[in-house]
Amino acid sequence: MAQTLKIEPTSSVDKDGNLSITISLTPNERKYMLNEILSIEDWVSDAIAGKINKCKKRMMNEWNPKLMPSFTDDEVWLDMVTSRPDYENRIKKAEKSKK
Image 1 (cartoon, rainbow, N blue to C red):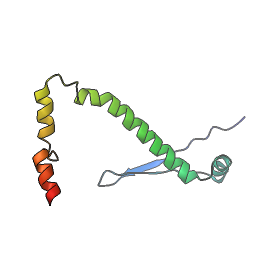
Image 2 (image 1 turned 180 degrees about the horizontal axis):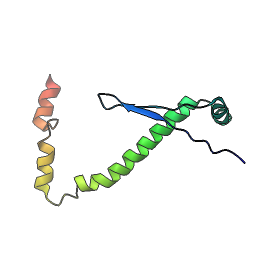
Image 3 (image 1 turned 180 degrees about the vertical axis):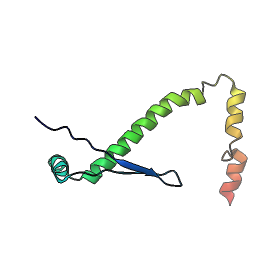
Image 4 (image 1 turned 90 degrees about the horizontal axis):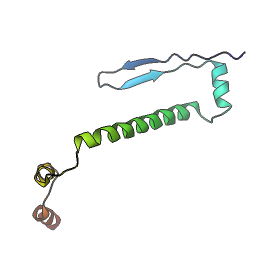
């Protein structure tokens, strides 16, 4: 009967909130993985990046409708846009392009 592997990562969070995770693999565990993939490090990195992207997409799909409800009030929408520090009306854009 095949043995079920149990990977026990260790983790720590630094003062800036960055999470570091360490996973130790036995030589046999490495052999199993390298039978299927070219690089364990690349596979782990791609798996984490993929999971982050999927979680981000699901979070955005959940929260965007809550944070940006359909605007039936044009004044609210207009105030949100024009109050942004990066908003420039046509006059400001023209002045900027002359410089």
